[in-house]
Image (cartoon, rainbow, N blue to C red):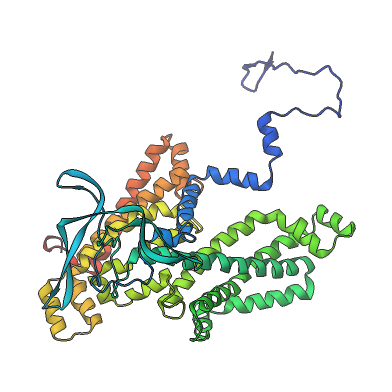
Length: 514
């Protein structure tokens, strides 16, 4: 029995010595699970890590659903992308119902009656409760050419015989918005894939050469990359897109856009590949391959590049959203795709006039799939949770705000032929500001809730650190720590918005709060 510094007895632990002689040829036995892990390929390990990230898995499911529209757009869409209905110009969305007069009917929409408002000279559509139009599934509808090869008429869902089914409304020429979104996914989503393929090829080629050989080759490629990265991205896109001949068809314009986006995106990946190869070429296995007589092409492609495949995949994935947004911006500005080609940017081109959007808000429908796809393939899929629970209250408040202006003032401004900008800033905005601030407060609160919830799912950084600190410092359960942080952040942000409204927009406050 031994004593420590405080003269308290310390129990000695018996030291065990294995009497069997040491045999270096004996291998340690592994369990079946350990053997399965150590013998797994790189792709299988990446798949296991991906499955553990729940939000990434759900983002992948959403993206798969979107990309399923690419090969089967004709089957999913109830109408053709450019089919017009002259009797339903700017028709509002028709919601799907299940019950009529208290009885279950199944999926159906109400028919619409239309008449012209003689004061505003606009079509006014109203639901007709007596006209129930059940939806048809796996049916024969509008004819189309499947992949441009053969004629077919099979659709996943069709309107009733002689009826309509405008789930997201129509535009100024009576074209169905939902069908346009489905067809538009084919071009908007494949632009990112083809552009990224071009970017990967160029990035791996130039980055591999610069990182492996170094010297004047590396310096030359780096100077070219610096020149390309110093140019402003959007103006360069616009200049190159405007240089495309107007007489080119939609297919050539599409390929021209993808080539432009791919040619301007490779410098980032090339620099990442170069930095990796500069370190990996000094590894022993790379030097051994060179000493065995392997050519530079084989050393780069078979020994160096596979060492950071996961990094290449991540860089390529993060490049897809920027290319989708690039095509959308160019098409929105009439510098990219044009009708009869249909993309999400082409559909948004109909929403350039803010006065039209205030009257027909469903023309902004293409914004939602763009945001979902960009967030699903972006750098932080956790933002999807925050966005999905905070976006809709703000949209509702903005829509309510734009409709809050008294109709008499709007008619007076239009009778005086006031410009649209003056109508929005001097007439609509004063009435809309209280609703906008209310929506901002609700959205900020829900955004904080979404951020805390997402950090609970994967507490790796940001708020997750504070949650871990609170649980260890104050001995609080994780749920209580997250709730405390949620309440504090919500109150602080809520008060900041209220303070900004009180200082900069005092006229938007109710009379009792001024």
